[in-house]
Length: 368
Image (cartoon, helix red, strand yellow):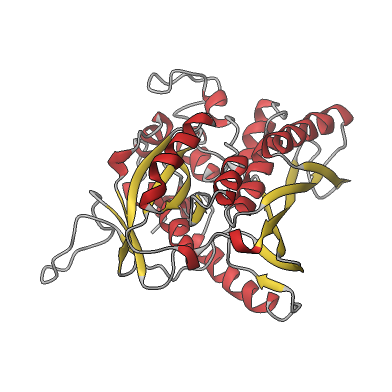
């Protein structure tokens, strides 16, 4: 699995093992107020009086390399906030403040200001405050024009409105919110198969894309947090899955309880052309779904009674939404219409789908 991604330098299996080790270590550094630790979309910390803090940390991965090469620095901060704030929103919390960390090889004030302006714009879209941060100059460690960016988002939730697997029931619908393209995952693979191969450059305009490659690759990540928080307050959704590193197969199961699985129909939503371009460069369909969001940036688990209201609210917020599947008895995630990866034993009948276990370690969303 993930052969092309591994060839591009990213080992998802190693990341999964590391997360499992980190979870065990973190469990030894806890407090009684911790309600949800490492493994969920956001950690939860009880404040008392029925309130909880939610927190998530993330980065932008090697999408930074596209921004650096193009010298377009004003939007990657939006990506950073999206990766963190939308994780916080997955537990039903309202993002309230954000902290950023920027490490540079050489401090150029105008470039730092451009990056932080993107962070501020992301905070405005997420409805949270940019409370502070740190800018560090690392000469001799980072080359002069290179930098890294990370952040932490903190939100607040009502204990009675926390979203998660405990609310999910068999028969619930899965509603997908459209992505704005690649978001901030899989860029090591994108750079390997599209750019480093010489097939395309940042100033290419592939016919199927219809825009400059640099514009497509640097399209900012959608921020769903205000929409999710409003739906959580109205008790319209049961759980949510932010589709980041690991794609749909790794993230949807994190919103489901033991004993329940999901069926998704990839034909139920339109797929942005950038994914066809990548797949056409030799990446298998199975690996595409294990690396990229494939056009769905957030999956909502919704009781059938709330379907119409959720679709209406999404439309009013300017988000494209589609009913893409349902929660079923059993385990695993099935992507209907896709052949299973690997050889098929002759004596075992195999469905035309990908079945993956629900018991998966958290995949870091900053996987390049």
